[in-house]
Image 1: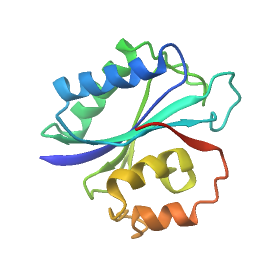
Image 2: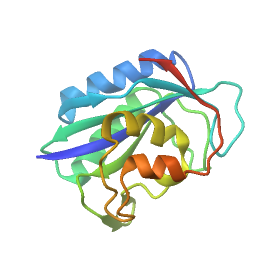
Image 3: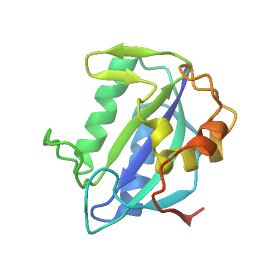
Image 4: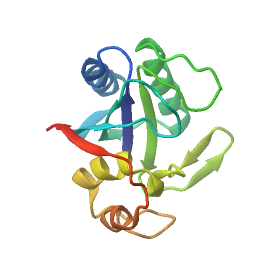
Length: 162
């Protein structure tokens, strides 16, 4: 079994329901939900959009191999209305990112874990810090709380609900 940290985000449709539905589907198809952060409201990162994102981080205990986990995760995104255009950052009903796969470092075509942008994204670090402040990034060797303190992202990230 592996503890996996996931970033979830939505800025289209019923954002709260999208997050709730993603958690429900992940618990049925990927593994047991161990922890859920609060929900944070954030401006889009890397592009302009009219609607802000709701973001959160969860941890899942899974027995799936990484490739099967990604297949399940992408299927859930699609069922929740995500359309992949390949055009970079854009609005979406559901975005699920694998932040950490235990303490493993995986770098192969289509899968890079830990997620390479964790340290640069306040919308990831704030909710991650809520549930895993002491988790040590396997590449940088820094705990999440220290990465949060060093993050240069000045985007507005505010608590939406606990």
